[in-house]
Length: 254
Ligand code: 13P
Image (cartoon, rainbow, N blue to C red; front, side, top):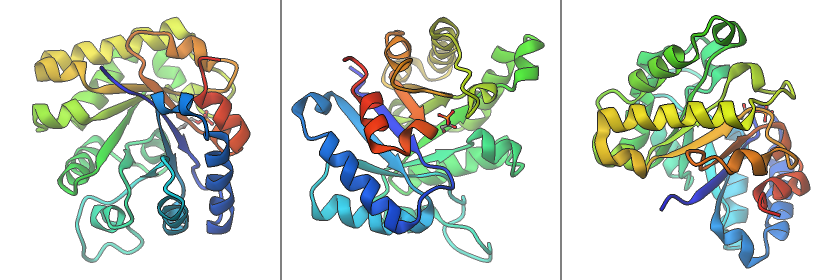
């Protein structure tokens, strides 16, 4: 049985002071046993992780902490980078790897993304491997080819156990921050395609691997997306910045 997961990717928003308030407000909203069916994760910027960790640990909140990126090396001459070990020491549980903004704005390529996925696992955390096609690729009928390429390269060399705990986020680039959402049918079909790919390479582990949808998820569209059998959660950008709105996304079944 795969547990639902709703993760908020704050991107380059929120100072460490904002983060304290956002996490505290979110935890008030989640103060209801109903919410326990969902694993809730927030991904603040690096500079806010320590503050968010302190609030979560001091107040014993059930919110998990995630990072938005990391480097694949453990230490060394990589000016400006953050290692997986630095994140795990901050009680980070999940690291987004290969987000489309990393791929398209910062030029990350599949080989580096695969090294990051492995490094995150080796440090005892879980990667959220992001995959997805651009608008032009979709128009050209290349959605499955692109998603297959991202998934196969990103998971190359993983063990079946690792794939069981892996999280994949299907985020069509054209739906990110645009207000355009994939229809639940289209999103569900691509997520089923990803699970089939995983089953082909990693057997029964694919049944345990969680697949999230991301791209303009909001309180109004989340229920229809979550109803799809191969969608286990959402990776939420803009709608995760306001704790009230994010709590409504998390409580998607109401
Ligand atoms: P939006 O929800 O703002 O479209 O962002 C999605 C995203 O990129 C999450 O990682």
